[in-house]
Image 1: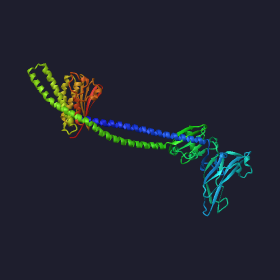
Image 2: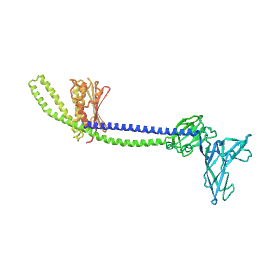
Image 3: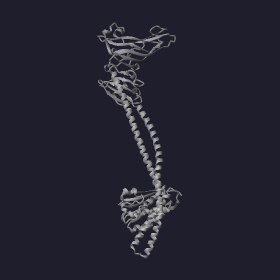
Image 4: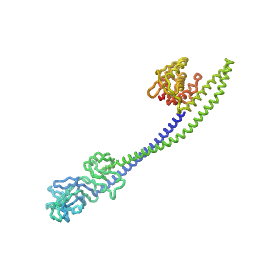
Length: 565
């Protein structure tokens, strides 16, 4: 029973711990689901805000910045800007000017903004306005010239008699340079390097009106005051296309570098989630009146946050589970303590009751024997004698149960003996009993098998198995008793055909006083304690007993570990 109590405690711990872990796991799954939903909502909200701003700014393009290194050069070495010059209000040019002559007090250099036009006969005529950089200046802003302010490049044709090439103007590199040490226009000690330009457009210039090239901007150029936190906290960018898929704008958002035109074209044609510069982006589509906005928002932060959440959740879950395990382990000890105390009291009661009943039953048995010698044919005395013997056997088995429960888990007086010799001795006795009921006993043993244990208990174990087979095996059945061994254990099995075996009752067979319904007949003796005693004997030797049913045969199997002396 102590083993059963230990098993009960183990089951309580496992069930409670499994329940606690399941609850923790469900809570963590719900938490992670809520966090995923929150991040998805955050990405959707940021994408919606970006799309709304992009749509509003597409109706009135105020400015755009262009990296001159991304532009092509014409035959004269000028940067070609594919924009309509008549839409431009002013241009901000950024560059670096330097002088290699340390004696120069001042230095300057410049070039020109060139507009291409055609005469009526198709002759190309170029008009320009100069710009200049002085020392310690890295940025200049020039109002884009009106036709009256353009200078003709060597032609005596008025601007009004030409037609402007509406999709292009050029920005020249250094035309001239001078310094305090060389006031000519070709001072080689002065260098000028142009880097980027910002084109400031006239009011109400729509994005859809552009035919000469892509608009390239960033968030700083479309958000009026400052970039909202919901946008700045996520790496993102967007592309704008017309209905046929042609790119109108590349907005590099808050990326560290502007997106190349060819790369943007591939993104727009794909129009789905992608990986750019080793960062994953989720794509959101927004259909507008005459264009489509593709917003790409990085999911890397979400994934990193979710990974951290999973790590923290796992650590917290494991820590909580360990704490709960300790608490459940301690609580289970308190729970089974009451069961153990109750069981000990029950055993003590059975032992006391058995001892108290033993004397009067012995007196009744002895008195009945005396009376039977005087009146041998008395039917009533015979009945009393039979029931008294039955009561004596019951008391003997109950005392045996309490005695065995008391010694389980304690040092035993084990010794080495031949297991097969014990089995043969029991088999020889039962062969006659099997013959009397027209059943056959077949045994399969090794010639010799030394075992360390209690020889008397093992002999009783064989007796219980074969007695059970005699009582419950089918008529004319063949019962097989087998012994097998390996390096670590000995297996005892008793197989008998039993057509009336109920598999649903198998788990109850080792309970005290349990007998199946078919056992309560006048033809079958027993109190339902035999298999309980067999289980205790197996546990006393550190083994297990089990029953299985297959193809009409019930098999009782006992596995006993092999121990040294």
